[in-house]
Length: 376
Image (cartoon, rainbow, N blue to C red):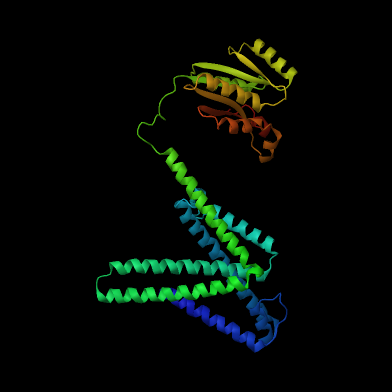
C-alpha cells in the first residue's frame, strides 16, 4: 500500500509538471510529436534538452512495455492454470519466462498497430477503455471482498475499518465507472468501440476454453465400472508399404517384434505400374508376409487405406488395429518439404478412428547429412 501511494504521488506530480510545461510553452510543433517533447521544445532552448527529454520518455515507454509483457504473461499463466486460456501459457522456459505469452502479446500488439495504422488517438482510446475496465472490475471485486469481510468482523474497531475500506472502494467504483462511461460514450467513433469488441470476444473465448477443458476432464476421469483398461481380445498389425526398400523392411521387422495375432502388409495402387513392380519385388524378396494391394481408381492414397482399416474394425470391433507407417527423419528443416507428406495426413486421419493405434517407424537419413550407415 505504501509503495502504491508513493507511485501515485509521483505520477500525479509528473502529470501536473508536464501540464504546466505545456501551458507555459503555449504552442505546439505538430501533432506528430509527443506532448512532453513539444513542451520541452517550447520551454527550453537548445536541442540537447529536447533530446534528453525524448530519451527519458522513450526509456519510460520501454519500461512500461516490458512491464506489460511481464504482467500479461503472469496473468495469462494464472488464467491458464484455471482453465480459461490454453494450458501452454502456464509453461515457462529454462529462464523462467512464459515464452508463449510473450509471443502472443507481441503478435497482438503487431496486429493492433497494423489495424489502427499506428494512430495514436485510436490506440489511446482503446488503452483507456481497457485500463478503466480493469480498474472498475477490480474495485467491484474489492467491494465484494470487504462486504464478505464485514460479515466475519466481530470487534467494533475492525467493523469500522472494514466499513471505511468498503466506502473507499465504492468511491473508486463510482469514479472509474464515470470515467469509463464518458470515454465510451464520447469516443466510440474514435476507436473505443474496438476495445469493447475485443473485451467481449476475449470473455466468450475464455468461457469456451473453460467449457472445453471441463468436458475433457469429464471425459477422461476414472469412473466405476470403466473398461478403458480392458485388454483387446486380439491385435492386428498392418504395415503400410509404398515400395520395398530398407525403411519398409525395418518397419516390418518392428511390427513382427510386437507379436500380433495377425500381420499384413498393405500397399495402394496409386500407380498401376508401381503396384506391379511392388508385387514382383515382394515375390522375389520372400518377405514371408502377405501383401494386400488396395485399388485406388482416383489415385488417392489416404482414402483406400482408411476404408480398409474401417472395414477391419467393423469386422472385429473388440480387437485392436496397430498401423505401422515408415517415416523419413531428415536433419535440415528444408528437407522436410522434399518428401511426400501423405504419411502425416494419413496418421492424422487414422488417429480419429477408435481402436486404431498408429506407430511411426523412423528411418534416419544419415546419408543426406554425410553420415551414412551410422546408428540407424
